[in-house]
Amino acid sequence: MFRQLITCTAVIAATGLSFSATAQNLAKDYPNKPVRMIVPFPPGGGTDILSRVISSKLTEVSHWTVVPDNRAGAGGTIGITEAVKAAPTGYDMVMGQKDNVVLGPYLYKNLSWNPTRDLTPVAHVAYTPIVIATAANSPYKTLADVIAAAKKNPSKITYGSPGNGTSIHLAGVMLEKAAGIQLTHVPYKGSNPAMMDALAGNVDLLVSSVPSAIGQIKSGKMRAIAVTSASRSTSLPDTPTLAESGLKGFNVSTWYGIFMPRNTPTPIVNKVNAEVNKLLAMPEVKEAILTQGAEPQAMSVQAFDKFFQADFKANKAIVEASGATIQ
Image (cartoon, rainbow, N blue to C red; front, side, top):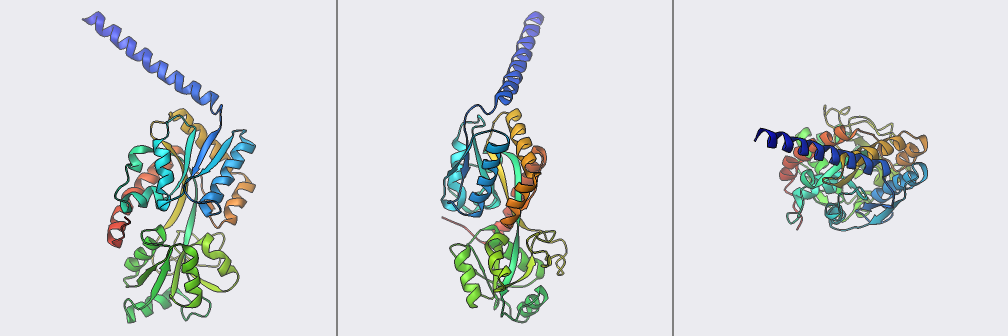
């Protein structure tokens, strides 16, 4: 029995070494064929543009062939489903974002996957501050003006967002809670109709991603009151943060990152992370991302996984407090 135990132990050890060597060889040769970058939103949007910046640079600089594949629908969850179902070989990746990999599972009750169980975080790419803005002729010039008016007339001040359950809507919910005020949320089917109604004065405030609102802000048609991130937006350097405006510790933003199916070999995950981080350090890539109103931000695999797990856990209570659901 002792000899059998020794033999079994040796076989297990050899098998483990064999698996490890195979994974290392896979990473060494990776990629030896085109890699699909699933984009969970239509062409032309922020996620699509960011995906194409990374895909084209991986092709140009790393000499990989990375092909974007738009799989839009259901708030980005269709594209994530496509990635979850893919084989964990490293040849399918998806550009996820907070709305579909963190908030989506709490909002869409019929999803067949759980992001913390079925996805592997690979590389954080960028984050996007959320801006609180109003029409240029609005009486609200600062956050203090908004808070004072809301406390005087609870629920009278309205704010528009791209829709129920989006990270932008939830930023509005968190603003109400932090400031101790009641606003009235007006959801729209996308950023553009919310913007149009804010410009027309049909809603008092617009809560929006910086990329969606920056054109109207730069043109002077809208006034940026504050951004929700911990630091000021590079695209709106003169706009204070909510923390600077009196809501200390407020830090909310949406983010983008690359994921692969669970059980993708770790050496491949590490290799993709290293290549993406190398791109994010390049001046032309930084500029391309900043032009979209986003902020490039590289992380190690471990740091991104920790960040993702914490964000997923923290948003459960926030979504429940908002009362938002999507059928």
